[in-house]
Amino acid sequence: MGFESFIGHVGAEHRYYWQVIDLTKYVFITGGVLSGLGKGLVTCSIGKMLEVRGYKITVIKCDPYLNVDAGTMNPYIHGEVFVLDDGYEADMDLGTYERFLEGEFGRDNNATSGQVYQAVIRKEREGGYLGRCVQIIPHVTDEIKRRIRKVATKSGADVVLVEIGGTVGDIEGLPFLEAIRQLSNEEKRGDTILVHLTLVPTLSAVGEPKTKPTQHSVKELRTIGLKPDIIAARTEFGRLDTEHRRKIADTCSVEERAVFSSINVPILYELPIELEEQGMGAVITEYLGLNGTKPDWTEWKKMVSTYKDPTDVVKIAMCGKYAELADCYVSVNEALRHSAAKAGCRVQINWIETEVFEEDIHKAEVLADYDGVLVPGGFGLRGAEGKIIAINYARRQDVPFLGICYGFQLATVEFARHVAGLEGSHSTECVPEAPHPVIDLLPEQKAISVMGGTMRLGANDVEVEAGSLAERLYGSTEIKERHRHRWEVNAEYYERLEKAGAKYTAVSKEKKLKEILELPDKYFFMGTQFHPEFKSRPWAPSPPYYGFVKAAYDKKMGKPKPEF
Ligand code: GLN
Image 1 (cartoon, rainbow, N blue to C red):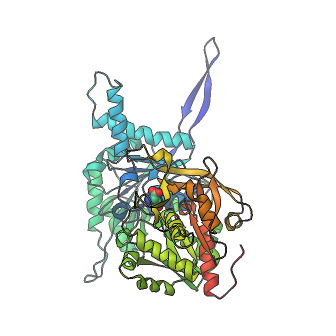
Image 2 (cartoon, rainbow, N blue to C red; image 1 turned 90 degrees about the horizontal axis):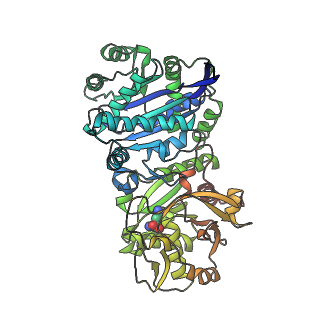
């Protein structure tokens, strides 16, 4: 809540002096011992605890890697690339933030070392530091602080959560940790707190939680001048008992009531409630001097309960190649779960290796065990034919189908080949000389050779045909969805595809590119050029995903095709 406050007028000119009083509070979140402890989730939980008390919050994720953004990183190794409304290709933590917190984020909510160094070096070349030797301290740390404060000012948030990626002790994270040390020192006492997430392992042979790694990681923090106010201990076996919390408190110089356990929760969205029950919300607000408002968890708890009640299971086949199995479809999985909660069922998501269908088409029969077939986004020739076989199976057997981006494009290829009679149809991404290039590069992509941030990215306006399934699902003819692609349906084939029965029921507002494919005589068959999963929220599931899961559930239950 940075705001200007009148502090008086001085002198004969009656000039008013205004001073910017910065009332923003900061919560820094660091991680120790090892990565993958769920720092993003703890950050979101803290944000939620503040939001349910009526505070406006924002988040900035600091990523110590040298990539300018996550767009050029292999998602099969580093996890999903999450696309924001403004087209920024972010680390997948930004996706977690959007699924937990109010509002949407943009490129300012992520600061990578790549961006920071790029800005400093650019300024140096422009003569911005003329005469000075440009150094990590103060120039790089100043640039980091500038980015953190910019988010604070632009958002007008009461509290800014600053999550530092990586693990304390990593060389590359040092400038960020030094920057938050300086920032804490520059801000008023009590306006900043540091939450440190560590691991408290329990070895089965010993059976006792071990606090030593936590002690060491706090020691590591202290050597760089940081001291945690709160410790969140990741545990595998439930909440830590008083004895262990006291031990951490004594050895790490925090209050015992400021040691919390980040436990395994069956549903991610339960973590904020769990930490609230342990008292974390009360301690954080007390430490930050945010007094008063009582938390109101009514809505959040209602939402979480919709995940717990259902018992019927709908089996979804996620079709791809092994290499894609990792963390790279988090948003797709979450969108399916959001939709299942709304439809009153649970989803079981199984990865189906479609490359093996290419050797033996009969292997596609495994899909008979599933209630829905989903082909998500992807790139490149390898595995594409297997995905086309899966789509062909779903279409012929009338298994509810959803195709996302590449899945939409390959559904167009499948339809072109087997329904429109355009033999040899393909995407030029796979076969540049295809006899029928039904999917071709976007014209503006043809001259692009630079990789980073150059796809068709971010939220674009889409016009949906009145009366279509898509319109019924969205409840609107005007929607905005996020994109990340270079290829599109080739305009030269619109007529032939549509004549054969493909219904493209949505186009981009600006260039009239095809955005949604429907086959209305099927139980449920839809493909989207955009990625609706990026905008799916636990309290507002993405409409195409909801339609797909609901149809899969209804069909399994022997119900007539849902009308929506
Ligand atoms: N490879 C396709 C394209 O670039 C699809 C991209 C995707 O699925 N995100 O157009």
